[in-house]
Length: 208
Image (cartoon, rainbow, N blue to C red; front, side, top):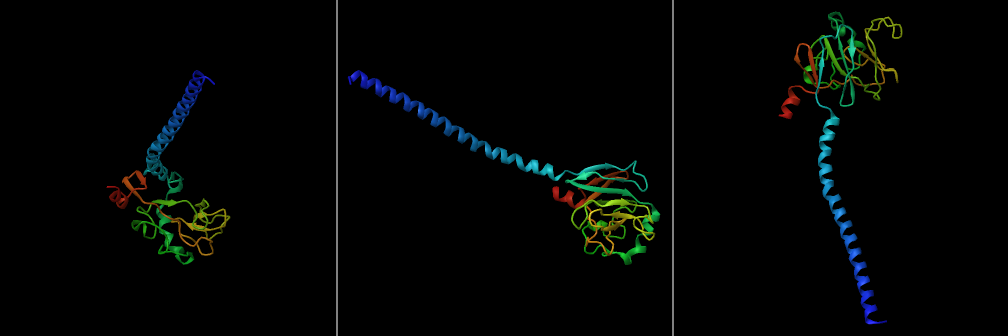
């Protein structure tokens, strides 16, 4: 082979090497960019998770009538909010002997809801609407003497999955699979007609 042919082959090899190096360098750069972007994507995740946890939820109570219940969702959980009559509140203590935890000593609620009615205000009940047995959604049976639950039924909730029963304060009856009362979320009343779920004195101090 002539010197000219050898030189041509060398130039071809050099061209091929240059193309390979260019592609390899570009690929490495692309990988580097991918790794560089990953921390930024990861840095977005906490705020997304925070949003998924749920910001405080403001509820208008001005149109909530006696015996009526609304069910907003907070932190992917249904919240039962209902207005109780003075008669219902007065009758809560009458069936303490039929309850597993009448004083809510083994149940979950904020300290301000550690009372007979389990609420900050006697007329407004706020409960996390998931059964403490296996997480089903108890159904409201507010009418005393409900045909399904018997003439001695004082009003409350019945879980359709396994039959746990709760009164109008979310306290669990004897004979229910659930062992504890319905849980209560943190909440406050910014005004007489507004309810803020997810924020109270304790959580506000923690966020400060």
